[in-house]
Length: 351
Image (cartoon, rainbow, N blue to C red; front, side, top):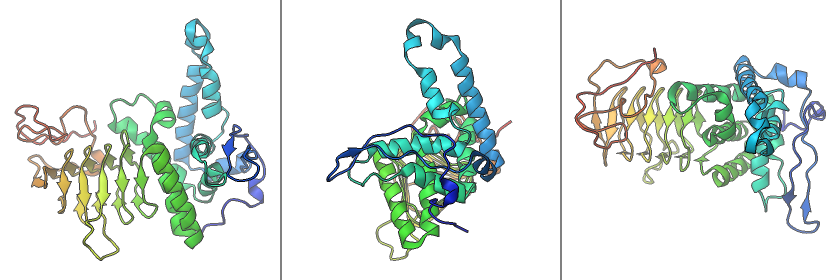
């Protein structure tokens, strides 16, 4: 059960002091520097985090330490870049994934604010991470999934530092937590997070949306997910994907339901309370307004449904390959663009 908004006694001991951030507050007094970030005892937070989060953070800190130890940062033109200071501030000065995320994400959201009275987003985030450790565990699963499906991913450090899809989804998980646990007050906090994330990251996920573990949003810009959308485990979205309503239904439940292991190509639009099956593929720029069965391909405007010619691979085994290997049919590549004659739908499984 939720235990409050993180302002109890356990939050009054600092284990790592967050970087001081200046924010502009409207009205008398002008700019101010917020108070140091309140966190719980290191030992308590370490206990609160699950094994998934601890394992991911160990990998991230090990990669960061190797970079700091690299001689490349100590000679030539790069010696004056202060990369080691950056890595210390973002990674090595923090004991847990939760604290690292709160520092990096909270800092970005707080530096963006101008008219919201100096809200402490770092405190909001860490409060949720402390009260519900499964949030950080899910974020860790999201990061690990990039190593499986993204050929450009060369380690968790880069995912943690630079993949805005990860940070936007982490915020969406926190906003969903407040949306579902704290009544009208929590919904206000959730909407505040949603608005700021849309402004900073260009990703608009309604706090009511339900997100499964292992969610991958590649490039992320322009992704929009509606209130009653449900995404299963290991779903892969490219940029500019819209999961919206038709605008004609009077039902509250009005957004798509995406099955485990589905792949949604760039700029595709899925409208209405329809089911996209497990392991299904929606090609780039497709407009889908009807259900897509498990393992099938939807392509075109409006989308036509193409069945698989090979046995359907269970979603947990699906790996999104590079180039046009997945979802190619009759000369249409994964992005729905002609790439020459390809004889059949191909879905690659992990080794």
